[in-house]
Amino acid sequence: MQSITLRKITGKTMLPLRKIIPVLILLLVMSIPVLAADSWDLNYRFQPGLLTADSEWTPALSYDVKVTKIMWSQPGKQTFRKYLSAHVGIRGTLAGDVDLNSEPLLADAGFTTAINLYRPPIVSLGDQPGEYRTEREGFRWGRLSLSLLAGYESDQSLDNRNFTGGGEIGYALVENQDLKALIPSIFVGYDFVFNDHSDLEQDLGDNDDSRRARVFASWKLPVGQWISGSLDGLNVHFDLRYFKSEGLSKAYRDAEQDEAVYKAGALSYSFGAEPLWGVINAVYVRLANGRIPPVTDNDTTVMVGLTVWEE
Figure 1 (tube, rainbow, N blue to C red):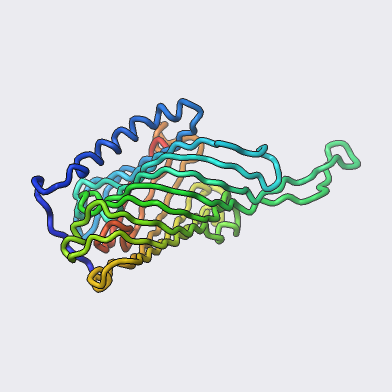
Figure 2 (cartoon, rainbow, N blue to C red; figure 1 turned 180 degrees about the vertical axis):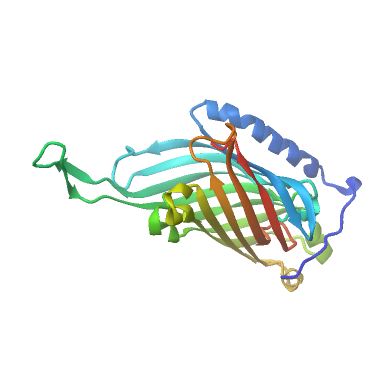
């Protein structure tokens, strides 16, 4: 795909919303502990490291913070348990050199209804003391979900920003033991994209809202388990994302900005239930290529870093 260099707009021409959005994101971050304290579950992951692209290096921080509340659910051990949840979250990557960052900043909220493809085994006592007999085998095949989502997306320079709203269906693998890990988690979504501001679209003489289909697939392979029991914490991650936009002008399509592909692979080692020095959950190296909208430039990046304070 073609790489496009965006022109920079001066502070005098920035929309007021450009100044407001960072404040709103900060307020969201500050509100997360309050929400989590009120029967919301708080999950977070921070990954400081070094990012390189085009033979240049910069410090970077990837983050993923989400609070979730189960609105309704069936008992945990019930066969094909169903539940409804709500969430608010932020995620993305911040780099010291903005031009080297090919990942967006995202904030979203939504509702998800899901069904666990799970059935507990039925076990009875055997003929001898301490013996058990399985009357019916159980299974754990993952989770199906349907989500309604609304969000805000931006590149780190805040030059391209959109409001989004849409739906998503997904299948998530809830365990990756043995050969089950070869089955990907898959999510398919369709969003209405409402343009807030875009340097790219101003350059192309277009300022239209659009629609966007997306397909995500990811794998987590426990290669350490396959090699040796002493390497349980060694994992390989693959991430593949495809985006296709509709309703954009011919100039946008000619610039090859109506389609995007993002590919990433990572090698990590997790320290399990006992973080190294009490704070380091894992170490990793990640290679990525492509772009995630609304980022407009395709880059190949490498990030080496740590996962800390993960919950």
